[in-house]
Length: 106
Image (cartoon, rainbow, N blue to C red; front, top):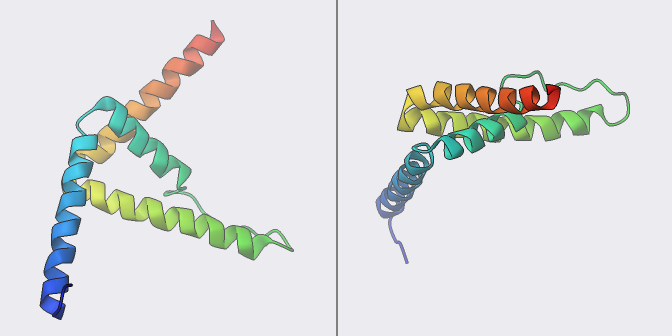
C-alpha cells in the first residue's frame, strides 16, 4: 500500500508517463493516428455542444460536454507527446475519409 502523499503523487506521475509512452506508440502508426483523430472528432472537440431542445436539452448538453471533456483531455495528452502529431492525425483522417468518398462516387 502506498503511504504518504508524496509517494502517491510519485506513483501517479509514473502512471501518467506510462500512459503517454503508450500514446506515443499509438501515434507512430497511421492507423493509430486515424483512430485518435476519429475519437477527437466523435468527442465534438471543436463544436458547440449546447442543445436548446425544450425537454431534454440540458441532458443532451451535459452528455455532449462529457464527450468534449474527454476529447479535450486526449488532445492535451497528444500535445504532450508531440504537438505535430495532432495535426498529422487530422490530416490522415481527412485523407482516409476522402478516399472512401471518392470510391463511393465511382
